[in-house]
Every structure is written in structure tokens, then in C-alpha cells.
Figure 1 (tube, rainbow, N blue to C red):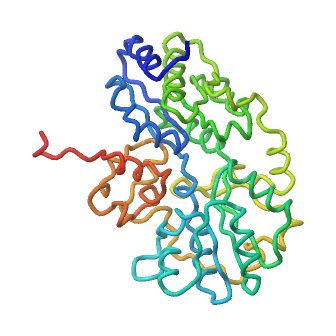
Figure 2 (cartoon, one colour; figure 1 turned 45 degrees about the horizontal axis):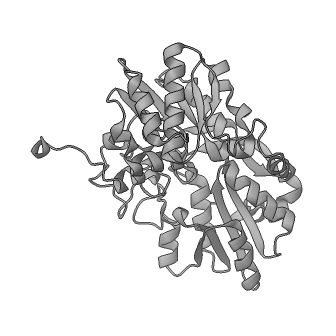
Figure 3 (cartoon, helix red, strand yellow; figure 1 turned 120 degrees about the vertical axis):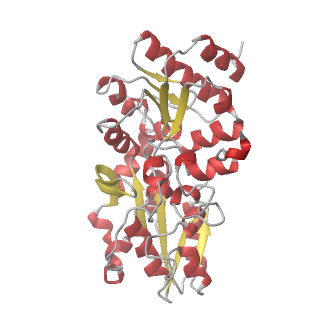
Length: 367
């Protein structure tokens, strides 16, 4: 018999959890499934499923976004980027052009795309322009970008990569002194590329239960049950609840092509800081397509390099220290139509997801 979401929910409820438990889901896609499906509201009250740093738009550093804006303001340069990046605000104030969308309203050419292949097509169709592909993403984005380099880029196309590796940020989070996480749901799409073995450190180094989850409510509930069962029995391990696509060693071709074109580097995570070996940068031999090198003279001087806008709690939301509802700007100054922090912009940002699933603060008149 095929196991359903109800089957796993009943199994969770049968565990009769008596103590508070905090499980982090790393992936923005997981958070979207949990919130939009209503699964979170069906779980035991003392079980918290908290969003983590799994939104690449949210953690794209302020410096790179400002550089992309500077490039967009050059009349001879066109920026193409994934749609969510257009509206992410920087920290230079509302009186200046603080997003790619604002650069667009000032007459500059900023083009939203949904895949790396569209960047190639746009460059081929506009061979009289200089095109920069501003690419933010995790390993699942790094592999197709490496593939497009292998395919061969048009002469007028450069890359501005803002690519992150997922497990190092989780490692950094788990080793922090104020960490209060009892278990982890590892991201299924990243594990599809990099393999399940990459997440063994959660149980071997930190003695925490971990399960790799897919993107249906059934797969996520199975992963939640696995983490809870491990915690209760103290049989700590890594369980693959997405084995239909996730293999132990991942996708060897995808990993090989990433390693061919990118070096592992330290990376700046917005709201977190520099995390060792958590990013990808183009290898030196590809500096001719690296916008960081090609347009270095256009990089702005950052005199006020705050990680998040003043008053914004996106940093704490990303690190699982606060829920979106606990941010003082959520629902007041910060909404999807007037976002202040990046977590309210992206489809994978926790604040944006919670807003769309109609999670609102309780007021006195609601009591």
C-alpha cells in the first residue's frame, strides 16, 4: 500500500511528543510546501518546523547586488537575471537607486529570465549589446551555469555569479553557541546533485537526527517523522526520504562539470557574513567571462555596508532564530508590495511564503 500524507501525519501524532522540538528545514521549496499545504497547522503544538537559510535570493550579498545595479546603470550594459533578484533592496537608502527594478524604471535594460538558457538566447538576439548574467543560486543553479559555459557563451555574454554551497552554512549554524536546533530536514534538490553523503556531518559531528526530504507534503511528513523518531529512540542517523531521485553519491556528471568551471571559495552571505568555503567562483582561466574581472573598474565603493536594512530581522529569520511573525517590520512596514528585507521578496523567502499563506500576527482584537 502506498503511504500517504495522512499515514505519516498519524505516525507523527502517535509519537505523543511531550517536549518542545525544533526542526529546521533548509530549503525554501520545503518551506513553501509546508506553509501553502497547511501541514504546519496540523502538527503537534510543541513541534516547531522553522525555516532556514535556503533562499539564494535572500542570502545574496549586498555588495554583489550593488555591483549589478552599477553595471545596469551603464548605458552599454544589459543585466539579465532571475526574476526575484529585480526587487531585492540594497542598503543605500530609498533616495538612491537601490534595486535592479529601480534601475529599470530609470530607463536601464534589466531583463528577467527563468533559466540560464534564456540568457544565451537573449545574448544571441542582441549581439550589439554587452550582456551580464547576474546569477544567484545554490548547487542546483551552479550545475546548469557550468553546462552553459561548456556549451559556449556568446562573445557578448559575461557572468556575475553569486553562487553558494548549502552544507557549509548549515555547518556554521549548527556550531554556533546559540543554536537551538533539534534536527534537520536536508534539501532534496541539492542532495540530488551533491548526494546524500554530504549531509552525514549532521549526525556524525553534531549528533543530530537528519532526513532528506522531497517536495510533496507526503515526503516532507515522512522526513519529519524520521527526525522525530530518531530523536526519541536516540538512534541518530541520516535517512534518505527522497530516494526516488537522491543517491548516495549524487549526480557525478553535474558535480564534475561544476568542478571543471568553478573553484570553491569563501562567500559572503547577507545577514550572516563570510562563511569559509561556502561559495563558487569562476576559475582563473575563465576570467574573460567573469564580470567581476571584466568590469572591475565599475565596482562601487561601499561606505555603509550593512548586511540587512536598518530594523530588518531577515538575518535572524535566515538563521532560524526568529519566525517571520516575530520580525517587527513584518505586516507593517514590510509587505510583498513594499519589501524592506530580501526574505519578503523571493518566492523562496520565508517572510514572502508566510505572507502568501496568510500567516498574520495576532492583535488584541483577535483574542
